[in-house]
Image 1 (cartoon, rainbow, N blue to C red):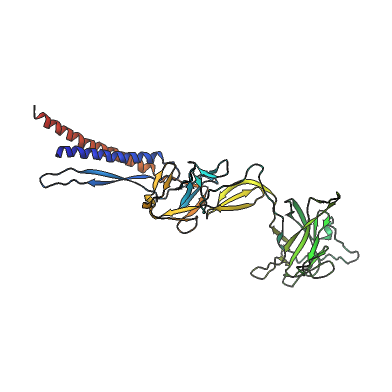
Image 2 (cartoon, helix red, strand yellow; image 1 turned 180 degrees about the vertical axis):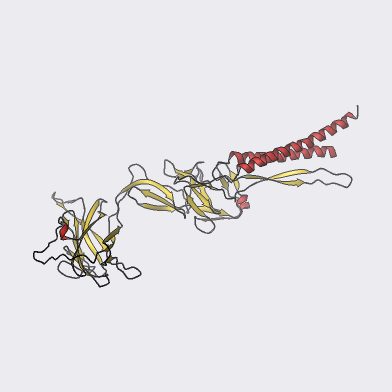
Length: 442
């Protein structure tokens, strides 16, 4: 039995090294596969019952494992649909039949229906377990939004010489006469159909700590609203007069007739819609939409957003309206936000990338398409999104490379090849000994 055992041990050794070579071959073949997790062949001895006088040769057995929990290096691609995770999470994906799997391969593109699929055809799922779909294409518009609010931050240069409106001769305001005002700035707002309207702001110092503001669209002055009584706003004509204290902070506003305006330091202007309303009799009427301008909004130091100090004139106006837009592209945020951008510079978050973790990721079952199947041996699943717990941080424009290192794999290949040769020598030696025994009969 010893000689036969020796030969069986040699065969077992060759089979074990063949398994190792097969795993190495897979690793080398997938060294460029995003999200691939290397195969590792583990060896353990096989012991047969023996006595002091009769040793029974055992052999070796192998166990194939996968280094799924081992993070692969990141590679920048610059593509908005490429994402990788730095952490323990897996992307939740789904095949055509609706079966859910896990993967670290994060290269996604929109298909013809707008769903995000990776290179193997698996659908990306959001945090709720639904397939991510990004609508948008030729002729599909994002509706515009009418401008309702403007946050205005400006400094009116205090050392400007006042323009006397009641002097001899009086200097009356004229938008076409630059000598009748100190500063002019324009702000684009959007009407109820999303059409752009340019509102011109004219600022004039008329006395110490006193400025007036005129608002125009083209050559047409705008009407403001007195909202001292919010339930009964009263339309008032240009200009609006601002009063400042000695520190340069806004203290009040008055209308053309010197009546106080508003209690909240917000000025509402009525801006005309570009397209006129057609009446039943065929005549047209110009309608307006209100835009509230926040002029107060004090900061932590108590300074108002409209000031009068010795620094140069500044003007900044942030608004909430925008024009209609067409689909431009999609991207991902650090915490997995799925963001869709449009030609009007608007970005909408439509969902969050869904992730999952398991207790023992190395016990997941690898399947075709660089996906893994959750099995009881891997422990329970926990669901979440990037940036939460141990799920990891999402990196956009990057892919996780295979965690197989070509240098290490080639080294393992050479070692396995030599070990295979050595085991074949064991078998060959056993065969030669058998030949000697057979020849004893001759």
